[in-house]
Structure formats: C-alpha cells, structure tokens
Length: 137
Image (cartoon, rainbow, N blue to C red):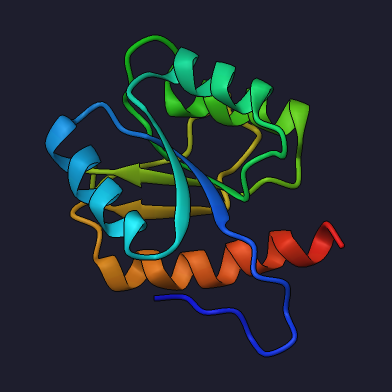
C-alpha cells in the first residue's frame, strides 16, 4: 500500500478508471480499494468525461482504456488536456503494436500494456499521485 511520508498530509489519491471490460474493471477496483484510493470507475468515454468535468476536487490520475464505447481514449485525453493539462492520463491497452494516432498531437503520460501488473499500478499511484498532490499545495 502507498503510505504518505512523515509530515505529509494524508489525502486519498483520486483516480478515474475508464475500462469497459467488467472483469478487468472489477479486478482493478478491488486492487485500488487496498491502496487507499478513491476510485470512480466508468465504462465509456462520455461518462468518464462527464465525471472528470464534475469532479471537485479533480482526480489525481485518469487511467483509461483506448478502445471505448462512445469517445475513445485519444478523444478523452484531448478533452481532459483542454480542461486541465496537469492531470496525468495513462493509457491501458491490449494492443502490443500501439502507435500514436497520426492526428493526435497530445500524448498520454504513460502507456501500460494489458495485462497490467499490480506492482506497476502501485508505482504509478506513488509517482503520479504524489506529484499531483504536491502541485496543489
């Protein structure tokens, strides 16, 4: 579990997870619950964008699949960057041959291949969550 350092204000890391696979979504939800993460799980891009727009305070991290119903991960990334360019957006993909979209000028902060290892997610929470908390003080 990611623990705050001595003297740091303990704030739960807020993550929006966008995953349309119910099995993977449930597994990730269970994992994040063990990490003291406030998780909002959405199953399509439009719902995720709506959640992002109404989140107050904003999430520390958006973790999204690329191939989604509604708007895809690339479109979601562009909209999030337009609203708040500081929020890290991390892509989850099952495509080993992923390439940047030709028309996409906005890269994600990180791309993780599925199946994702839980140790990777723990490291991401520590890295990106802490970075976002510090920038808000």
